Length: 148
Image (cartoon, rainbow, N blue to C red):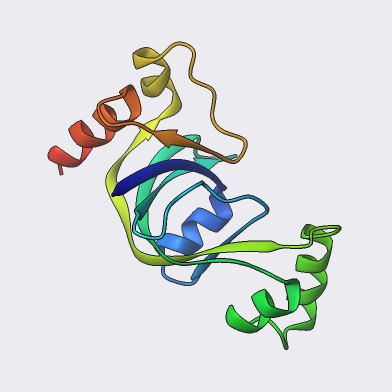
């Protein structure tokens, strides 16, 4: 089944996703999905941009020990990264990451003001929110992509 989530990612990291230098999105919590689900991550670029800027397909979805996560994602020998991730995952028994596959930056971003026009109650997610078929976010994305 196709599932979509709107995920807040800081602008400096979303830029790395779309320029092809960030291959994993590290998280403390994951969306609930089944093994046969196809997950699309719609990126809300927080901080500077405050806009929906693109999407990617979730590849491997990891929920494992810290050491296993660092090994699989290729960070086990990067001392600086290890230090950062140890702090990020502090007190977590299981660590999570989503592999970034086929990132596509939209030609035109959907800014926060436009989202709020369609849904005055919209608040950018702290982590992620599910996108339901034909809800305001889904419709804005469809309209935006059809104009590309």
